Image 1 (cartoon, helix red, strand yellow):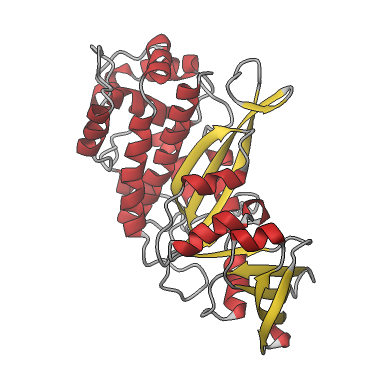
Image 2 (tube, helix red, strand yellow):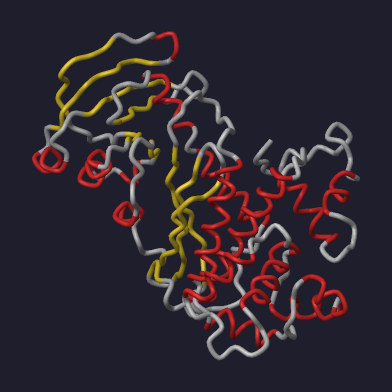
Length: 377
């Protein structure tokens, strides 16, 4: 917890009056209790209370000043504004992105590349009536904009499951010069034109009923899997009104799966093979979703209100980013999974954190776990 910028947390708390009518259990205490639950994968509020009270003599040194009670924690999650922890997560995200700014992702590119996608978390509609999804089923969606180079989520928007993915493009501010890689769910030419007007670039697969007129073609090396590289204009009545400019159409056959893919982009300077490889990098956001669902507590919630759910999700994201910061600043060779496992059993130990990681097995002596997702190798 020494890696947390306490001053920034205090500013977020003051911004949303988080300590209004609070006497003993501060927002920092709430964050630390929820962080403990994430790092040790606690099952319920009662579980959190029992484990923390068993280590009561160590809580003060951990930074928890208030009395830990499940009712107090439940009330804090329900009442205190979730935007406190959303803003604090953004502070950690900016720190992590600066630390990982020189990381590579398989392509030599100076531009920032973002992957946009969403994941659905199923909920019980009778317990979460605000999380509308289907007639008899509830869910929330985590719409995530991932910095591909750093593997850090830069924007996370939590909505009911009934909100379509394409609507999230209306809530984003596009960075000039950046490249946004999206799937077919975000193919809306009016919204893509807004990306183009923002001096940003997009890469998206085309739909099967895509109608266009070829203006001219460029030569391609078909031995690489490329089949064509064309400049086209839209011919549909409504699509032409939504996107009046020119588009680049790249057709590619994957040599491994023999799957034929057609990509659309407004970038005319990158090589066609780079366009195809950019779309492959979109799978990093899928790995991010699988990783946090497997290793953090975001599939089951400690509260049923919208505020409690968003609070838990944002604190989970903060912990993910915090562990990535610790890994980089301490120059650790272990994966995030290994770091989390070590932390889960050594949270209240007085051993320096760097020493705890240095005592682990070397990578070549560690048992192989092929079923575990690995980020930041």
